[in-house]
Structures are given as structure tokens and as C-alpha cells.
Image (cartoon, one colour):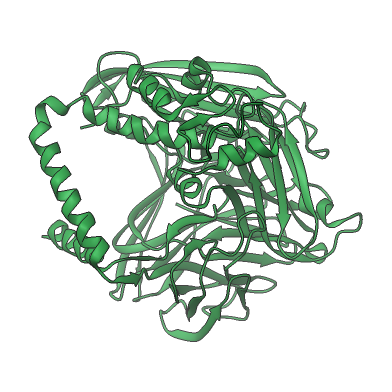
Length: 276
Length: 334
């Protein structure tokens, strides 16, 4: 069995105005990934804004068979009012690192996933499933096959009649500045956006359409020479803090459309064996 | 591996030694002249070091950064082998046998005819007063990549809440084309009604899948929200949610993925306290929307609010949140 000393770090967006972000560490899933029953796991949660680490929380979790020293670790981040959400700058984001701090390891380095909950007293609740900082197999496959990093979303939309806008949230959790191109398929312009290291920005699609927003629906691509973490936020046109939802992107897939017939037979045989 | 790093480094003016080495050189990072082997050896030498720490130590990706994605691919592949190698002594025979098996499989795959992989997706549908669902498949072309996906034959089959097929749409999508089908009007009981759309896509020639994954958009008079489809269901799902603020209602949307009736149990708990339990049956391919009767008041992190579902069949479950009047609606696959 492989043994990894850490899980791939997860990255998520900090709170929009009026929101609280809550993330419950998936203790049971972490336990399931341990290669030995007794081990100590160190969790580090860092909150970043504009290149500065603004909060750090740590926990040491001792696993001993089915028991663990911490039953639940819920990380909450409240809006501190310091993000220029309307202007799209100064957004906060968080990173979660998990590593084994004792003998033993994890059977996989894929993160133990849990939804992040966005809620607030006068805010619509929504959920988000975060992103992997690096090591995403889909990204790796895409770059290997296509020679480019290309995230996107096929169903973006701006609808002034429904007071609906959408934003591209760009998080750069890396040490170098990120420069990405935003392409609204079918429209001539390509917008170049720079995101400083350990920073996050929001780019409104309505603003990309021009000074007067109009109804537009279609595919958005975000491409670059080094990739960023991307989310798509749907919100009100007249008030971007009136959030509806926050979705992860859909990468342009480098998987082939065809497979060898023998490969399909092997998979079929494998399924039959699993069933029996 | 790609020549992406070389291409980008050249576009950027690159270091002055660019052009001395042929494009298929083993250099991973052109700025620091680090080869792929150097980087791989560094990974073998420090298997517990995380990717960015290793890059900083070796110098890879610290200047123009164009090699970072290639470096990440090498890191991922080598770490897996490295992790597996840790237990090699106890499993060396099996590893060797796997090597032989792999060679045979690869040879068989090379001589075998190639067939298109059928792609499928299931999405819930919501319709009602001012609420509609748009089912979408986009065979988009990015200017940075070009047309790399083939033509796809796409079919949408639309089912009502009782699992009866009420509509069917078929279209061939060339690269650059998309299919958006808006479903309006009642498809189930009065008020907010639900159903499902089963989507199938098959490539008509070889290429890459690109952006072909189906999505669905819930459109109301004051919001849009979109989620991707998923191919298979689950028998259990749960979500940790929040006490809804005034004017917000939360639901679970369930679609039966199978041709047999499904028996489903929905439960909401707060800490050790059970708040609601509901039993329902779904017809084959049927769908239901179940309101979660959640408490009001302040959130209590010590007593998490969890909604869960158990089924004897594969079902597709989404947590749905409707806030305000008229409502802004979002769905989240769980």
C-alpha cells in the first residue's frame, strides 16, 4: 500500500460580505486514509489576504483505532469587512494542510473532502466543495495531453431582467504572480487579469461585457501559463454581495473520447468480479 | 510531457541559452537548467517534501514559472511510484508480475479496435411559477487550445416526477456548437414541480472530451444557478447545513437513477437530536423534492445540523436552497 505523509492541501474562498464560512474537518475520512490505526495528524488552516497570512489555526489529532482526541474541528471565518468585494480586490482565501506527525502515513494523498458552508443572518445559504492546491489529476492529464491549462464553465450568464450576474473568482495561492486570459466564447476580446501571490480577485462578467450590461449566456474559458484556483460565483447584478451560489470550474478535458475494446472488456469483467 | 514550458519561456524572451538545446531536451526548467531527471531524483531523495517546498529547494518554477505544471505532473507521477516503492520489499513479486501484466494489456490495447466511450449525465429539473430549468451541453472551442473535440451525438430524455418520459431531444454538436434546452411548465404536482433529464453523449470520431460535460441551470425571475451533471448515483448522501435565516427554505432533491422503484429515508439531526425523518418511495426514474423542516434561531457549531439520505437504489441527491420572495434558488450535489 502506498504511504503519503500528507494530504494535498485544499483551498477555498473566504467570506463574502455578511457571510460566515464554516468548514468541518472530515475526521472519519482522515481516519480511513491512515495506514496504521494509531497516528497523530497535524492540521494547519491558514487565512490569506493580499499576500499576508492573516490568521493561522492548528490542531493535533491523535487517532487511536476508532477513537480520536478531537471528535470535531469546525473552522469558522467571519467577514471582517476588509475585502473590497464590489471592486473585486482584497478577497480572502484559506488553505488547509494535513500531515502525519508520527510514524505511519496516508494511503492516498487525495484530500478528504467536505463541503464548506457559507451562511449569514440575512444571507442566502450555499455550499462549495473547495479545490486542490496542486496534484489535481484532471489538470495534470489536461496539461500532458493538450499542452495548456484551460479551466472554464459552460453555462455562465448575465441577465439584467433577472438581476443576475456572474463573477470569476481567481485565487493565487502560489508564490509567483499569476496572469490569466479570460475568454467569453463568441466575443472578440480576451481580458488579461493579473493576480498577485497569495491573493484573490473577483472579476464580474457583466463588467467584461462593457459599460452597459446586457443578456449574455455561454462558455467562459480561463487560461494561463501557470494556473490559478478558479471558482464561478453567481450573484445579483445590482449587488454582488447578494450571492446565489459558488461553483468549481469545469476543466477542458484531456481525456480521450475513445478506448480500446479490450480495455472496455477488462472493465466489464472487473465489475462482474466486484458484484460477485 | 509537453513543450509548454519551452513555448512560454520563448514567448517571454527566455534566458539567453534558449535555442541552444533542441525542443525535445530533457530540461524541465529552462531558467535554472534543471532536467527532468534532476527533479525526479530530488523527489526520490525527499519523498515527504511537499511540491512547492521541493520546487523552492531545487529552484524549479521560481523564475518564469512556466514549467510549474509540467513539474507538478512529474511530481505527482514520481510521488505515487515513490510511495508504492516504500512497501516494495514485501510485494516485489507482485510488482514484477504487474509489470508483465501491464505489458500484455498495453499490447492488447494497441492492437484492439477503438470504440467511443458513452458519456451519461443525470440532472434534476425544477419548474414552477417563474422557475425553469435549462439543460445544456457545450462542445466549446477555446482559442488557446483550438478545436480538439470531435462531433458528439447528444440526446436528452426528460422525465416527470413519476418517471414517465415526456420529451426527447437529439442533436449532433460540431465543435463550437451547444445545445440549451429550457424546460418550463408543470412536470409534476402543482407549485414547484420536479423531474429529471437523462443526457447521453457519444463521440462520432476520436478526439478529446473538452467541455462536453452536461450542466443544468435553474432560472428564476431573480437568479440563475448552475451545476454540472453526474453519471452515477449513490445510496447514501449527507450535507452539513446551517439554520436557515428568515425567508429561506432548504430541500433535498432526489432522482432515482434506476429502472426499479426506490425506497428512501431522509433525516435531519442537530447534534444527537433527531429533527425530522421522512420515508418516501420513488418510481423508476422518478424524482421528488422534500422540504427539510429545520429549526429556526442561531447556528450552534457544537450541535451541527446535518441532513442525510439513505436509499436502497442509486439516487442522485442535491441540497437545494431557496431564499427570498421571489426566490433565488441554488442546487448543490451531495
